Amino acid sequence: MAGGAAPGGSVQSKTYREARGWLLLPAWVTLGILTLAPLTIMLVYSFLTKEFRGGVIWEFSLDAYDQFFFDRGLFGDEPPRIEWTYIGIFWRSIWQAGAATILSLLIGFPTACFIATRPEKERTLWVFLVTIPYWVNLLIRTVSMKFLLRDEGPLSDGLIAIGAISEPLGIVNTNLAVQLGLFYSYLPFMVLPIYAAVERYNFALSEAAADLYAPRWTVLRRILLPVVKPGIVAGCILVFVPSLGSFLAPDLLGGAKNFMIGSLIEEQFKGNAGNWPFGAAASMILLTLVLILLIASARQSQKRDG
Amino acid sequence: MAKPYDLRRYPGFFGITILCLVILYAPLAVVAVYSFNASPSITIWEGFSLRWYVDVFTGPESAKFKEAAWNSFIIAIAAATTATVIATLAATAVLRTGKFRLRTLSVGLISLPLMVPEIVTAVATLIFFNAIAFERGLMTILFAHITFCIPFAYMPISARMQGIEASYEQAAMDLYATKRQAFMRILMPLMMPGIVSGFILAFIISLDDFIITNFVKGAGVETLPTAIFGAVKQGIKPNIMAISTLLLAVSILMVAFSWLIGRRNQVEGR
Image 1 (tube, rainbow over the protein chains, first blue to last red):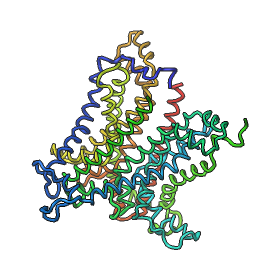
Image 2: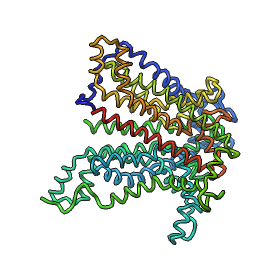
Image 3: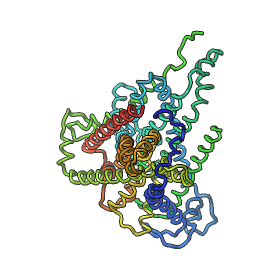
Image 4: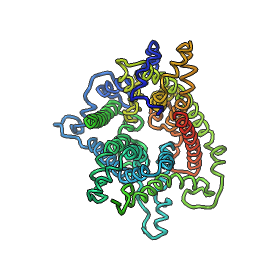
């Protein structure tokens, strides 16, 4: 930061006050028309009647949400029972995204700690090394993962060659492959916020605890972890949220059996299902879940900051 | 009291860091190596060859990929440029016009595309174009890309602007520069590293996008990711690995470039 500007100091600058409206107008117009309006129309569409093979009929209907939560039999005349198919797909997505998040945390936390405790000059280089893969096209990364993991792929062949396994790996089209794919897609998002938190951490706190005879792993658990928790939470959210709605990893690595929310929604618009209101309703439910999560974590961090 | 160990070091953390880097790079390295394979099979190694790179540029699918690459490039340039301009103006409004009522809301609106899951944005945008009967094609892709590029362009731009004190512009205006001159001749040159970073970030994000493009593109219009996805659905072929490796090289060059700019940014900022 340039010389000693107080936090929010530049806010006090009013140089272009008269032009404020004109400066903001392009952003408001673009985002208003292309983000706010579409989300509103999506909400409306989720309450309309479906037209076969895509599109909607402008007639109010709760069918989309009804189909999501209730099963009324083949002809729709039986008493409603809870429909578990779609709730199950959401549940599986949450579980898959959660597993990927935990995996990223297990690898990402030690990595972030290690980088943050390097000499200052080295840190940039390490951070750079961790971030480069993020800049590579996600599709290409996912395809690469599939290439590596597939049966007859280099990993499987290598493990057979050294005698670690006797059968081909058989990972592709399993839950594990999807978890690995998601983990691989978003791992840098876990490392960066934790790194930022540990870098600010004052290791004198650790010294103090150790002087009072705390073993080093106790110091880690009781002192370092609680202090850098905001960074960990941020990292988990940055991995979990995009994993939850991801499409590429489950589609390319999971196959037809390991459907996630992303594929369910995509089916409604691009695939054979062609039920737009249902796709809009599923999107609304996903959006609601994500917003609840984001708001909860924002309130949590507000509470922490006082 | 001297401790027998360093509290900043934990055993095993170095090993996990190396593991982390191996995981991050191994898939990309494997694909890059196999793109030079002479064999048409993706499994057997038959020696070094550039045939799949030749195939990318002259093979039976080359016309399709060339068109897709051109579309991707044009859209990324146009979307990143527009998003950078919008983000620069918005950052000026947020950071250089004092406090105002819609300030928090404006920042929230700018970061909204980051909070909404990509697939939801894709659905909403598709439905929107359908509702206003806007024919899907290159333009719909461009509009969608401009939107989600704005927050990515905004981040480095606003970070840079926060680091530039208003006194520079003040000094210019004390010397009878108009506000327009202060903006164009003082603030903008100082902002350049941030603007270039924002542009590159937006450019890469646009180039990277698959889901939203796949939803809003018209029939027959492809960008590189959608064309690659279509090809991968038929099975991973060696020419896909060659294209992937080329894109990998482009990404790494752009990141290296933006890193160099970022370093200049820091040096000047001090």
